[in-house]
Image (tube, rainbow, N blue to C red; front, side):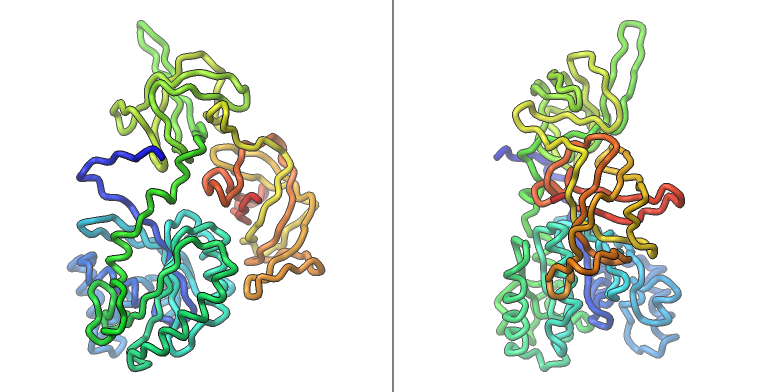
Length: 422
């Protein structure tokens, strides 16, 4: 496999999503990570102290760092997706803090859609519950390569190795049915900082590493598809000078590695050409790879517009109007098979009609339901759609970027669903 070259001072970005049932301590864990890595500004720290004292806490209530919405602070829960940012010497991080309630499943799907890693919490006193299984299934369905199960509140079970091993075994049996490549287990106490950024002295029986070490060192380069070259065109840039009229094709590398001088094919025309130059952040570069946003210049004059794609001649995506997918429905109104929806796929926009609802998925039991085919908010279902124009796509399991579709209600312009192509 081609090796990705990075400059020594370029920090790699890790996106991870957090999920857990209500009161599992997810907000406290995120607050602990931000606090112990020095990601809290002085004014935030003072505000946190005041808010903690107001709520009757002698110690800092780190959960308040993330429970920013008024309703969340009043109830002590998370009801929306919030993005948090921090960095260490080794990496930059974006955390998608997602809700624990069943009725906010759609929010987890949104937050997890771009994640490299899912961090799922469970309460050591409760073990593996339905919500734990639900969150793990969603992580599997969204093809997140890495999952860390944090068994939290170990301080409330006397830091018991027996409790940890029981939960680890229970989850391992369940997760054997899921499509997750890498699963790790960590016993923690988010409240007291055990195994968060340092190894806990209270759990010497635990031979693994602390959470921050895993986040800083987990290998994610191979998470990107570097084999199937896909470059959806976002915009055509025309640069007119006295001597020449140049066109550059800008967009984000979805997958694969493109190099100056490569032979490529344009879809939908299937005309072949060659990359004459690649530009990134105002500089000419020799190669581009995901998730870089670049512009390319080619040697031939081809009619190219937004929604088209550059690929390899001998490695092309599927092109079709008939598409099978698993959908998560976001809207309060159920799917309407008599209605046409706007769809967005990579940089392409089209119309689509629902041809068939094959079955719904019970994400607590993983069973299919072929009797009830009314797809409501937060439901998962397998459907078949017909699009107004052919799309260039791959299976979601092989390529998340070209295997995903969002659905938009044309009357309200709301995003009403997200689909993963089967």
